[in-house]
Length: 288
Image (tube, rainbow, N blue to C red; front, top):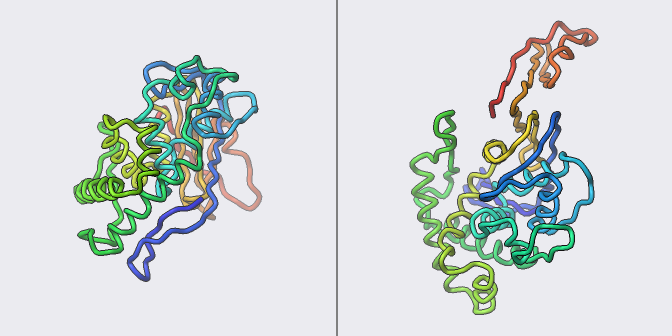
């Protein structure tokens, strides 16, 4: 998967090819997810995901669907994923839209833009991004946008992030208008003028903001069920996100070595480890 990263030695953003694999572990029952106005059960959700991700998955159960949703929501640093996220969550407004307004089912058609088409859009966004940051248009080309997290308001941009995103959205919008007729015709086929600005804004924000924590927060806000989850991704090897809904997750810390363990069954934490003292414990209850 292609991602854009800041090179600390040159203060320039550059594109890199990296593995991108989302891994989840979960315990409990994930029943429904609500991307739009209506919630979908896990069977219907699986049919919907096979279309928006352009990847069929015949695996049964709730875990594959949960992983598919996280695969859709995690997009930070990758323009293709940011394009796919913004199209699915901002351009489309109903689960049946991807099926040509037929009920979501295994036999329904797939009206999602082809992956090749979305990668073409992503290349335009990436070219505009590199032009903005590496050609001196940005007030701070080495700036990495940050967010503030709070229980009361969720995720908020820091002030400079908002300025740069707004400026970048304007630059990208102008460059897309100057793109070739073939590209604009394909874009107009799938993204109506009435939502074009929201789409461009959504792609840029997803590129900067759709990290593990944001994606997990959004997943839980729209999910129904009783479960705990851990989420990791090869693109962010130093991060893991734990969350619980309707049940606890207990986290154990060992003082003798860099070891952290987590479980939905607290009784498992005091299990003896060879040559190690008892693991300290903290609990997470219905928190992201």
